[in-house]
Length: 368
Ligand SMILES: *Cc1c(COP(=O)(O)O)cnc(C)c1O
Image 1 (cartoon, rainbow, N blue to C red):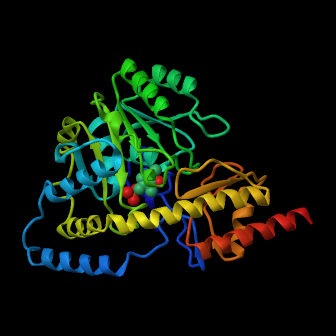
Image 2: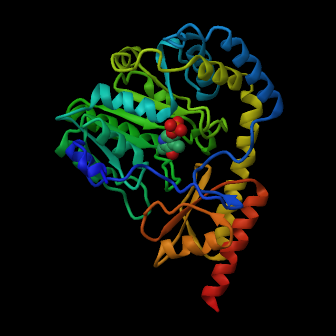
Image 3: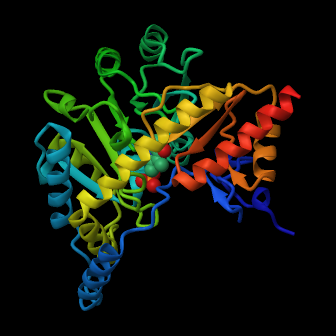
């Protein structure tokens, strides 16, 4: 039988496995940071309406520049981000993963490198590899904050072409202070100058503000966002970035023509009409996240500060064994491979109760 290794695949892909959070059929799934609330019915109706309209023109290619959608995304950012951006500052693609891929295709590639501070979002490194960009794993402190001095040293030493900063960070949940981002930006400019990509996939859940205002006077800074988490639309596949207009021009050199389908654009526009309702769910989830943090601590677990819609908890001698025991109780959480820690996404109050009951039981067993 022919396997991958019998094909002439690129050397750097040999022996690697694809990204994959287990999609198991269990009663309570709290493993991929999705929004647990289905879209509200009036929004579902509006999507159907806008998609029906779009369907009438599916014989034509979609708006290649997604002008209406980018204009609405710019309005959303301006309304919520304490910084005014316009169409020329915003670019959209199929999930922020595609945004990240386009950035790596534009600013990375063979003979170039990117750095991230790990543990962090594993797709940054995986997409780097897929685009032939060298990956450098930068350090964090034991409490998962960015070790600024070590990070500055790593940037000066490796002179990466792209610096990734995830804030709030996944899988740890903690936010990176704006002063740290500014310092890293300055280090990156002194070293190369390189692009600095701030991945704000979870910013709507944060206690703090978006770093959007840092775009002022920083043409090498990119803020990347997504509708997969706060907007409860992971199935839509819509990510976007805000940056200097020159960055928006640059990524268009690598984007596939008509990459955003007319159906995607219509659906995202419908969702943006319901921003207020969707951000209402975000408030509920933030309260549930804070409850998870408090209750996990009360049960006796260690918890990393969270500004996201998930919580990292530990510490375990064998986190995979604990993951399995929680799964045996019908609750799927995430083992991100961070030694000693697991991650749970904030679900509905009922789902969170089921999770808390499971880990409370485990703690009792452990103490018995
Ligand atoms: C979930 C997540 C994304 C979202 O990716 P999409 O392709 O937009 O679904 C991006 N960055 C981080 C850090 C994430 O956790």
